[in-house]
Image (cartoon, rainbow, N blue to C red; front, top):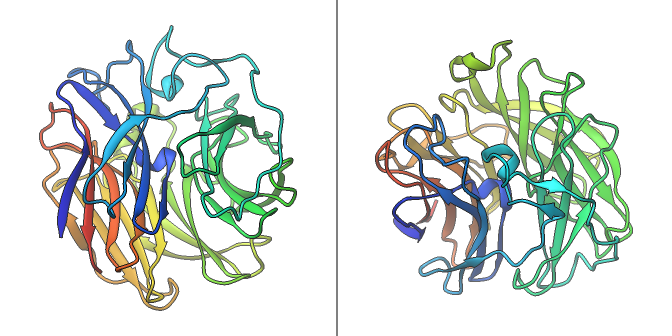
Amino acid sequence: MKHITLYREPGRYAGWPANYGIWAWDNEIVVGFTVGYHKSDAGFHRRDRDKPFTAMQARSRDGGETWSVAETPCRLPGKGTLSANEHGQNPHRLEATGAYESPRRVNFAHPDFAMMCSRTGLTAGAHSWFYTSTDRCKNWEGPFRLPDFGYTGIAARTDYLVSTSDECMLFLTAAKANGQEGLIFCARTVDGGLSFSHLAQIGPEPEGFAIMPASVRLSDSHILVAVRCRGGGTSPETWHTRRNWLELYASDDNGQTWQYKNRPVENTGSGGNPPTLTLLHDGRLCLIYGYRDAPHRICAKLSGDAGETWSNEIVLRDNGGDHDIGYPRTVQRPDGTVVTAYYFDEEPDGERFIEATLWKP
């Protein structure tokens, strides 16, 4: 097992690969994340809300052994900075001006295709968009506006499954009827991204939230989605005491209907953490997540029976400085090595940085 630093700078706050995505073409891997500034007294996320966040991506051409980092070559749909509405104050908050690109057809089956999703916020009134690339993330076309699909707000992170050159499914988080986050659903385009339609909500509207889906296709009809969940409560000040866990849902009709399957992880710690779900070359499933109680750690579980049962927890590392870690995304190299990227810290008041763990399940 090997831990490799993608990005780390004193005084900076780098975070949340799960919000942006990971893409791979054999041993070429690209990871998206965002970088702001550290602030010691900022609370759960020790970031300076008065300074901008910048979208970044790290690229490796040797299977994650070495990395180069550059600003993400994408245009925002308005004035502000990426992630600012969730993590920043004016003047850095994104004020969308409607400056979206007109929808255009894309070949989802292009060998160098990638898609990235983004959003203005998490609750009612949030809207979302996506970008596409056909040159391995060297250039991003867009932003292209996503519809609201009848929900009070859409908070898109990157999670999609390509079916054909014209068909692609997006797995998205929406605000609930009361305007709070969130519930999950899947949408589909069958015309190369010119339009998207609502396909199905995944699970009932929760008392707390169900957000940040991570999908995997097992066959033409069979799809699994792992979901970050939190118990209910009425006071925002008590969010850190509510229970957090991961659930698994399954569809046997290519996303048209969904059934609850099980709870692979009963507790992801204070604040919770999203999953990343990967189908390994040998047919097993690999579920990876951050655990936000002490000892703060990055964990994995394996399933050899399509998610029916799960192994005991595998600790990838347990030296986190506090709960502000995780948000992983994972790919597997041709040689079987799993590359998992996440954000991490080694002490409570230290910088947040992007790390990758290379390991073989």
